[in-house]
Length: 104
Image 1 (cartoon, rainbow, N blue to C red):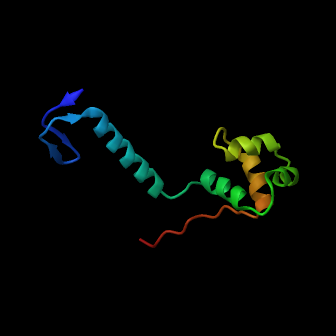
Image 2: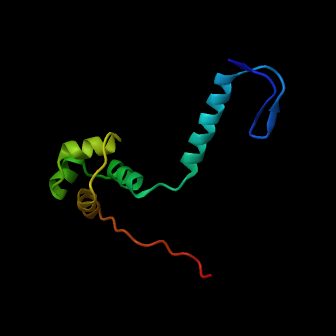
Image 3: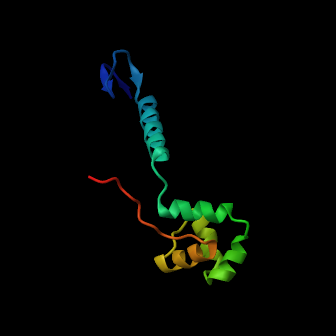
């Protein structure tokens, strides 16, 4: 599909442009924005498991969470329940603390 005179994020496209090219640019922008965002609890727990000196099998033994659950979680195919995540976090020595905000 060809578009003429289309405006994209404030930049006027005066020549004929392939719509696929615009879609790719838009997706790349979204990916960049997501990567800049602060990692959430799930991502931090996943990264801590990967960075740990213990194997996933050892973490599963100590926490009581099935090795298959940890495998699916680390590979991003499933999430952990809050109870399971708390058990894994305890084994890894993680603690949930509030973020301090400046005074108003």
